[in-house]
Image (cartoon, rainbow, N blue to C red; front, side, top):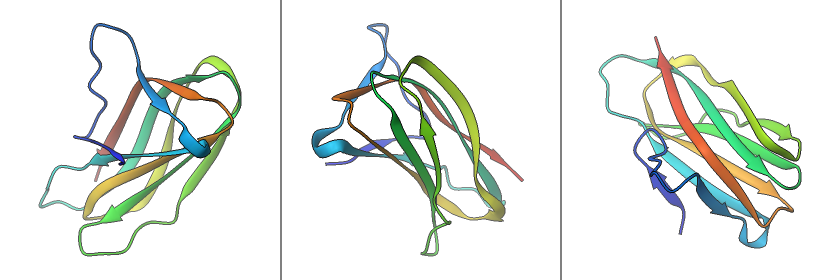
Amino acid sequence: APTVLEGSLDLGTDGPAVAGLPGGTVDVFLRLPPDDTLRCYYLGFVLSAASPVRLEAAVDHAGGGASDPVGLELPASRCVAGVIEVEPAPRDGARMRVTLDGEADEVLLYDLFVIATG
């Protein structure tokens, strides 16, 4: 079953969340809070993987449909961080879909969050 988070990754004191990659892919969904204002959306991440990982993100719109997916090829690293623009046009977003794909057994998620502007 996909992981569903409320707008950001809730980190405990035991270290990063671990996203297992069974079959090489895992989906994480970040719910976007309802808002009367249309927004542009960005994804922020801090993660680690023993081998390269492809990160892909898209915003599912509240009225149906989705933004075009935006992807990044991330290197094997003890820690890589970034912010990417996922939905450049102001829209009514329902959730952000983040797909991690790679040969690593797992990806360590130190942080995963949405920035909404508009």
